[in-house]
Length: 431
Image (cartoon, rainbow, N blue to C red; front, side):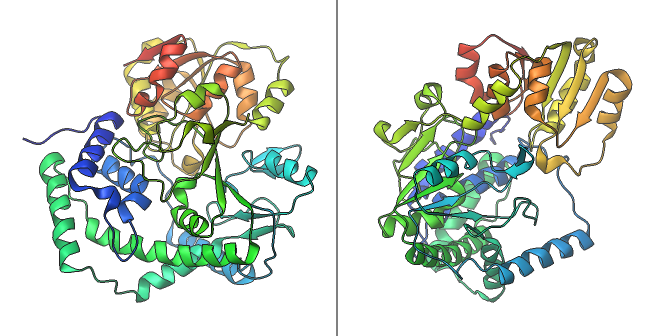
């Protein structure tokens, strides 16, 4: 009998089951552990196939937009090759590609103030920046390099790589594919995925290692370390300390950080900076407690001071959209219309959803409720104004608490992340 995956908890438990039964975290192809390195991507692939994550609200590009994006990235990879003009530095900073406007300029809120500290301490650094939707909004300067070259080289290498699997690998992978199909009724082409992962890993690893050998940093700061397993492996081989900066929520159900069946540190940062003691208590990943260090979000502290005198708008509710489940949030509101009558509702879309078209479900909400969709706005200004906030498991909900927003949670896939949040805070849950 097939199991039904209805939630992130179900999804994680199924993945942990597979990892334990088949020792997937240690499965290796040509020196690469593809499941361990790209575990979070496999999690999303299975989750979307099981409809845990919504596929309807996502950015769709026309053919001309895709070609334009490819040309921009290709041009940047040639013009701003990150292997050129490198120098020895004390610190490498791998920043987050998304930007926010601060004091009239676009910044990465996770590394901007850290870089200021590095400069104040008269240490040298280079920032490594990957594009966001094919573009770089933040200005280029002498202490920054673009990483577009990585994407281009991976795509080129995929075209010319045979990377055939051994018979032993094929037999093993087939067993895992069959297990997934028999247990949850979906086929995941792990053979094709693993072939691509091995190519991608080797290309990225070689480029990162060249960068590290040329720059010889004492330490590396990185946002979203689980997105750079190749860099971490290269750093460990060169005995360079890697520090990850917290960028969002995590719990035992976030597979970027939760390894209940293994303490595998191969692709994991050496130290982890968390925003406060609350997050330090939630550590569910393979790192010793003394290497988890409280490092407050300076951007948040600045924004709290900025909006401290703003008066709340009565019954204004800020709903936080989230990539993969915003469609489910909209459906849930439509099924509970009576509850939301009387609220002034503002739905803040996730950046990945800015280009989506309005669905009939959204149009119905605009017709029946005081309902507005906003995109690229000052989120903290809305937190300061809003009496209520609502969402599922977005990091922004924790930030809204700092602005004294009353909290409503939607009982949708991902609410598992909020177990501790619910224990510690007064919240209303809508089913």
